Every structure is written in C-alpha cells, then in structure tokens.
Length: 452
Length: 181
Image (cartoon, rainbow over all chains, first blue to last red; front, side, top):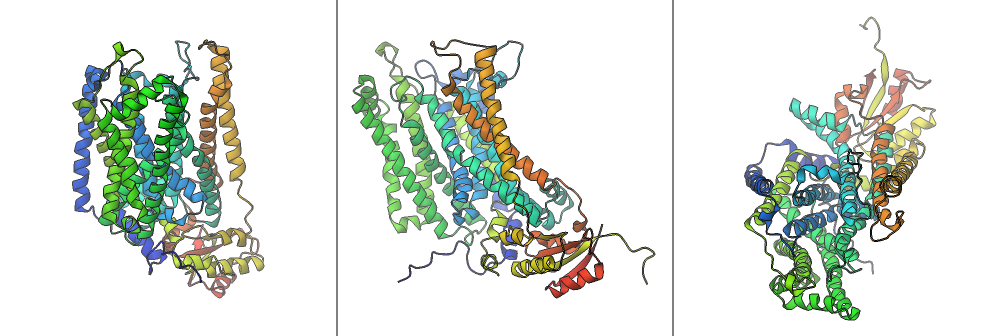
C-alpha cells in the first residue's frame, strides 16, 4: 500500500499570478488599520526603551541593580535571549534550504527578518552594559594612539566577531533573497516614489537566466556559509560562561545545549509571529497546517535536547564530585531562586510535551500560547544560569541577592518594542513571504521541471 | 510609411506563457544556430541554464577566495597583534596561543566568504544596472510575475529582425516585440 501523499505546501488553485498578487498586495495596498494600531503600540514601547536608556546613560549602570557578586544581570540574560531567538531564522533559511525542505519557502523571509531584528536588540545590550558606551568602538581592532589591541584570547572579544559576522551575513543572505522580489515590487508598484525606491533596491534585476544562474549559486553558497554560523554563534556566546571557572558555568555541555536552546526559542518566536501574521494577512493558503505541524515538531525535538542538557548538568555536577558544582545544582532547585528554576522546568520541559499529540500540533491557538510559554521559559533559563551561579560566591561572606529594577523591566520591554517596531516596518514595506520561492512551489512550476 | 532611419535594435523578444514552451523554444533557437540569446523567468529554472548551455557559475571559486582571504587576514591580525605588536602575558600562556585564535579566524572566514558571495554575484550579473533596453517593453514587467520571455539579441551574427520574429512566433510566442537599443 502506498503511503498517503503529504498535504500540499500551497493550497490548491494557486498560479504564479495569484501568488505574486497576494504577497505583493500586502505591501502595495493601503495601510491596514490594525497595522497602524500595532505600530503605535510598538513605537510607544520603543519610546520607553529610549527613556530607560537615557536614564541609564545619565546615571550609570547602577540603576540596573547589578552589583558584586551579581555583576551580570538582565542585560546579559536579554542578550542571550535575543540572540538565541535569531537562530531559528538562520536555521530555516540556510539549513532547511540545503536539506531541500520546501516548507521553509513560505516562512524563511520573515524568519530572517526576525533574526536581523533580534540580533540588533541583542547587540545593544553588551554596549549598554559597558558603562562607557561612547567608547564601544574600542572593541574593534583598529590602530589607535594608545597602542592597544583587543585581547583575542577572551571569549568576550570572540563575541564581538561572532555577533558582528552573524549580523552581517544574515543581512546579506536576506538581501540576496530579496532582490528578485524587489524587482517584482518595482514592476507592480503604481506610485512613483515606491517605483523609484524599489527600483533602486532591485538594482536592475531582470530575471535573466544568467542572473538566476549566479543567484542560485550565491544563495546556496551563502546558505552553506550561514549553516556553521547557526552552530557557532551561540556556542561562542556560551563560551562567555563556559570558559570562566565558575561552578554552574564551567561545563562542556554548554555550547551544544545553548545551540539547541537557541533553535528552540527561535522556533517559538517564529510561531509567535507567524500565527498573528497568518490571521491578519489571511495567509492560510501559504502557511498551512503542515507548516505549523513541522514547526511544532522542531520545537519538540529541540525542547527534548534542552531537557537532556538540564539533565546532564545535574549528572555532571554529581559525577564531578566537585562540592561547589554540587552546591550550585542543589541551590538552583531549592535556594532563593527555586521559583524561577521550577517555572523554567515547567515552561521548557513539561509544557512542550503536549506537542506529542497531533491535535495539539494542529491547534493554532494552543501553539500560540505554547510559543509564549517557551519564550518565557527560555528567558528564565538564562536568568537562572546567570544569577544563581553568581549570587553564591565561593566565600559565604560575599553572598548576595539580586533582582532586576524597574529600569531593567523598562529596558527589556522597550527592546521588545524596538523589535516589533522594526518588524512592523518590515511587513509594511517588504514582502514578508519570498515571492519567487513560492512561485517555484506552484504546481505548474513543478510540472515544468519534468518537461522534456 | 517608414521612419527615415530604422531605430537600432537590441534584439527581438517574445513572450511565452509557460516554462516548458520557453525551454523548448530556447533549445530550438540554439539548434538553429542562435548563440546570443537570453531567457527571463519569474523564478529560477535549472533546465534553462542547461538549455542555454551556460558555463558553470564562477561563484564557488569567488567564495573560496573570499573565505580564504578572510581567514588568513583574521589569523594574521591576531598573530601580529598578540605576538609582534602587543605581546601580553596572560596566565603564562604562550604569546602564540593559537587555539584561542580559532573562533575569530573562523568568523572572519565566513564573513569573507559571505561578502565575496554577494559582491561576486552582483559583479557577475553586472548589477546594479539601472537601465536596460528590455525595460522599454511594457509587458516585460510581467517577467517578475507570471510570464516567460526569450530575447534573440541583435549582436548575434545571424540576426535579422523579421526572421527572428518569425522564429519566435513559430516556437510558440504569444506576442513578439522589437526591442530598441
């Protein structure tokens, strides 16, 4: 008996023209009312960010409640959280392209945009945390009158290069994929200003077979280059912790488990964004139940890897026989931050187990709620890692407690506002689904491939 | 009533409504001896590169060079700063502590390759090119929507507008235009 054919990735009845028209009309039509409202809300949050950061610059990072022994607080938690979210975009656009997973075609564009904006938010935190943000450029190696160079043996310098490369390559990959779609918008825009703007950005793309020939090669090569970045960026971030000699941080499981956590939280964010977009722009033909189910399965798989990481941390603490490691592990579960710890276990380990059920994977409402839960859980995970290892120093006389202040809250919520502001601008002015890659999914295009 | 001097032509272009006809037309035109021709499609079609007998893209070589250059520069930068220009004893480790230099070398390799991929693709495709004669044909805007075009270019030694237009029509073009240079 032949297995049933998989559900189509594109609802039946679509042609090149309908796909093109639907996606480009989201950009070229009049601004929808919900967009204006959403943008106003996001922009208000962004203003909150500017306010919180202005206060930070005026008073110094003391307003954040960080002090010895907990000198790394929400800023580092937020950095790791945001950068982790970005990873799903790269995984979807690069790794799934190389594996010829065609279901990525309808979600890769906005997932890549999510990556870019998440990395932008992430990159701000270390700079804000510098205390002297005006000299952030000292992080880069440039000939200077002080005769100094960055210390290349430090993971913190590796971070600068890892995140800088990640942001640049993600931007390039995104732009190369956008060029043919910008040409579509140039050809379909009516207003002169839009025609000129899209025309300049499309750079004269004509869709010539010779263009596509090189474009395809460049796109695949960029995917090949971005694939190791999916692994390396969060590994380097995890080394900020793992290279230190601190119990609870100094562990070899960190790089792979950070990467799995990054993909886990990133796919959760893809769902958080995809489900409202699907509803607002009526994208049910393009983002089908099969897509949601595939995303849910990736979340379940990476969630299990993350759970394995937690288990290994506990095992290694016991197996190492190191009393400090054992103390940190027990203290996480039973100490003053036990609430955060158990909440994180509930969010990241227990909640996603509902995804074993087909009905759960088919319910957009449940998936949306779960994506928020996982995002919260991943934030708590980083909070627990950063704070619990620091608040109990080696000497009990140096022990302390830490909690974020109102300025931490405002900066964090404000950075969500920055993210949403950028994302809303993106969906208003650029096609949020890759048009040329969707055309290739149209049944006629599939048949053309079999032509003599 | 003909104009005093016929306009110089870039080529003759035909519109097709599906990729299979276009691929067939490209093969037939090449069989008839056409060498300066190009096809335009709303999405990449592998068979077209084959039908046009395009040489393998030079992108892989360009990216290899870019990535190698990035990696060498990255390692060289670290070696020169940490060993020659500003040696700093960190916990008694050797100045040339190469394992610590690998992450930055790796990142700059990727960065060099990525920049080479984009700049190389643009250079090979002669982009940006704000103006092109084909944009003079109004229907050509559909090349980015749902239509497929084949242009027989005037620089082909065997070019002759009337014959070229007839050939395109014979091969299934719905409509044919002379494209002014």
